[in-house]
Image (cartoon, rainbow, N blue to C red; front, side):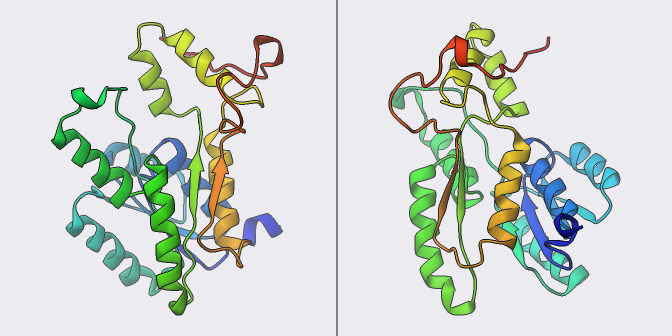
Length: 235
């Protein structure tokens, strides 16, 4: 019962909540008793999740558009009268490119989504921004933390692997990067988000690594004999 009510009565906004890590975060907060308002550019996926999960409200939106973000917060406050937690999850990972192959427009787009709209991929900048915001907002009783996920088996990871010349080899390398011998699951990132919101009440300016230890040492951290699980890429 405690797990169901650990965030009861709270209102949470999640960006990029239609699939992958975002959808897992939406589910985790609903399971914890919260009302969740989430946005995504994928309207079909968002509507489907909204119908599946009671206690959710889906609002179509693009985190790179300031008007969409203002509408998201305005609608949340109009419906519920308060807001307790914002999870800036929306992000994307472009195919690997050399710097000289990356256009200014592509890089600008990456910054708009992943830095201005989320906490995920541009981890160094996001961590610095997290610490700065934690100091600025502490006077209002607002805590600011970030989660840095490692290799998490999501639809995005699956799509990126499928775009390589040898998807199975790509997945294997991604799996071997963790000493734990497997990739993470979206629900594990979601659990970290709920923990930071509901229980880590004396933590602010924190970067929580959900990486399976991938940052420890160099190169492969596991070997084939120590693999726990390798995702399967279906056609």
